[in-house]
Length: 132
Image (tube, rainbow, N blue to C red; front, side):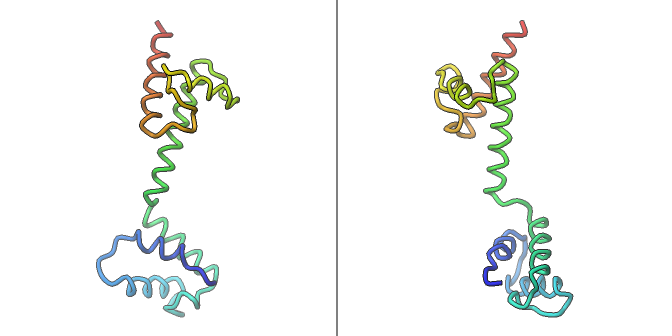
């Protein structure tokens, strides 16, 4: 192996007070059952297992959390559109609906997280009015 980017990305996200080199050596030693303290001497399987455990311990990074939130918000808006009666299987129809100034004024993919929140609120208001 020549790239250890995954290992170091996970290592940076681990909560630790002290010398990161000591932590790195300890993690590698644990992953190899004491065989080595050097990343280059790890097998591919040991490396993957070590990284997987570190990533699980550290949790998702900020980018991953942001993507998850945006995906969740987009899904919410699409479900609300579907409830209103918009054909959500056709992106042209979705974009035409979103471009309406009373809805969002932009195509669906251009909506920021805040705009997705506002759009969801507007769609809920439309649904509430339809119930009356």
